[in-house]
Image (cartoon, rainbow, N blue to C red; front, top):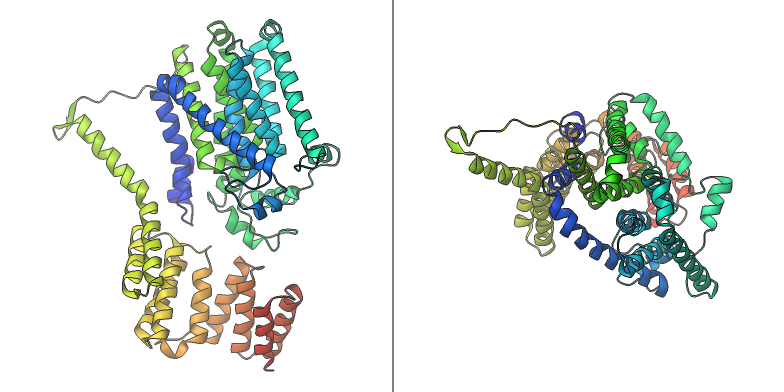
Length: 539
């Protein structure tokens, strides 16, 4: 609820993700709380089938090195680590752990036979194919929690199964090592050993230090949910000067920076409450064999541990699974006699004589339409671009306007519509369209001051096509605009190039040449930068 409030009211920048992500967590939690039996008996079987298929996909990627529905060049870039249908191997590792921990726990508690054992080894093999250190950390944390929770007596009673799992895991490890030794695939544990002996080697420590400094400047309410990307653009640190980074790779630190100590405290309070209740009801859970509670707790532990070095709480599907496990845990607590808040029951007819079922359906439909607005807007903008590419400028512009109407706080739609209006106005020699593009760019900057692409285009508009504007900006205004753009994106090539053009435009030719040479030294192979230097040098 705090994340929703932050996204809707506290955040100066609008992100559809800021609504979708907390809503995903909330709805998954509510669905699991109200329908735990179906989720436990049927839903989890479906989840196991899906995660098994994903594991097979990941193994095929690693064994063949062919990509298997993924570009081979991208696999080479990430070191031939499997990622299946996810954007990164680390995300795949989190998903695999969310499936493997309940299956592994089920087997170690004396349930299931060869099928469950085989599925466990399959998921473990897929986890190794990701070569994710965070994934290994999540698995280790989940297993340690599970063993601690079930206690020594349970471990001793099922020691043969523990031995079988250990032998199976070692066999899988040996196969991976042998397969890599044959030169058929790339795999090693060197990164793990290097991290243990020398610390992190992926430069995440630089991001963590940068985040700590930002946290001291925005201590209580933070910089706004999902705003880390904007903040990082303005305060980049080596070796990320030429990269765009949207995640801290530590969700606890990112929550602290984006939502302040208030947000981090509530998140930690949620975790403390869950684990406090878990150990409070531990004896009862073991005596009553509350397997859904135990297995769900082991699963969320793996994700909470992985969140220390990655960003699983910013991935919708992982949030949904986490919320479902939380809902199962919540309902198990209620069944075991935990105190909980009961909402007052609403009489069947209370509001304007309408049936409560009808009111509920209307609310659900309204809520679904409201949540669907970002998707409808995106579809409208894409259709507008499609019409534009097919020469239908009128309808292309119309559908971009629809997108902006549906999502008036999304700065990107203002930028797209403004660019279309400007290009049409210049091509057709229609000053009124150029004037309208100027207005649209200004509105885009107002709705999101962090998204400076609108101001960048507005600056270029007043510099290049000022004769088509009724009130072109002064040289002073143009320089103040481009200075603001540079303050938000000091390492952006488009911002630096426009800065050079603006310097040349206002008459500061020497400084323009100097800045162009600096940019040329940074980008010696860039043809646009070379042309820029030639243009400001007047050669």
